[in-house]
Image (cartoon, rainbow, N blue to C red):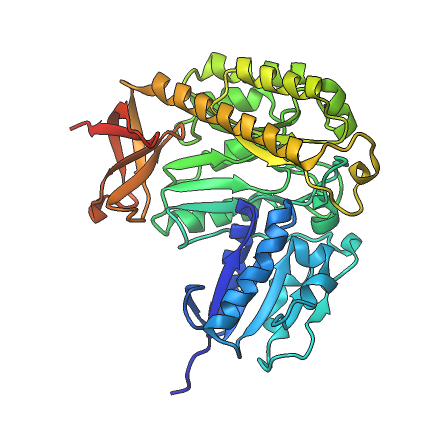
Length: 439
């Protein structure tokens, strides 16, 4: 019997990348490959790249080295956003054999009939205008929850962002295909689906290759709510201007959609929001948070924020800090602004020194710790349902309530991927919540 070839994957970046890696991995399984962990020896290593932060760019070289250490003769392929934006840079990294852009990544198996290492990385990338078709994806088997891609690309022109250059125009999966994928996931004993995309609130645009909306995001949520066999549905990051009151009201009464929203803010200063070309002002953001808390008082609200954008003076940063401090939110994802080629922000005046950016980032991360602690404290004594994760972390099993409170208990493999009603009792020294099972 011939030896089956082994393939390993490493994913950088967002939930959307995880969904797409999983889909690419299934195409390898269909071609007779065995998937192994990235730490193991493989014949092919596939790295799905990200370009949102500087850090993700630097990580790439380290990951290639890691693969080469495991097997110096292994074939190394790079796909994803960074591969689309800077293919020559990736191809020049020692050990890289193949770089595929936005339209080619899902056809990776077509490019690897010959696993001989190349002298120089081969590039197959497209003009981003060609990335106008949609490939549905979802992750399965990697985690307790599945990431279901419903939308790709973005038509927004935020002045700091390269995602439209890396992923192309906004386009959506058909409603029929999203529901089919959700039903497939439901048959795999997966308890939670997280909806993902680049700009998921724009769902419905480009559903059948045209620019008009065939469906709305609210209609998508309403239809997914009817899929049998899914215990939980979670909305990932959604723009504040696209999160409508009707959607918030629907989630509030849904049995499957959980009370958790992640809403990018980026800055609490209207002057900076305008320079960023965001499509809302801080007043709208307050309205959204207040509406959510009115109909779902226990809802968890996460916030993306960028520090050190050009023109962010001390006063404008303090506007952001004080705005977030007073807002009824649960945690922050803090991004330190990093210059990106081919973006408008690169040419802007008022560059913030890196040490100032780092100091501001540290301040907001400290605020996030306080916000999360206050949110967790507000949940103590309440009855919630936990979905347990699959990893043994230093003798503990972790899980999340429907409203995204992280909990822990002594390791018990029987709890993995199960849901249990509990009463939240206390916060440990590490900031994670303990609980009692409700019999």
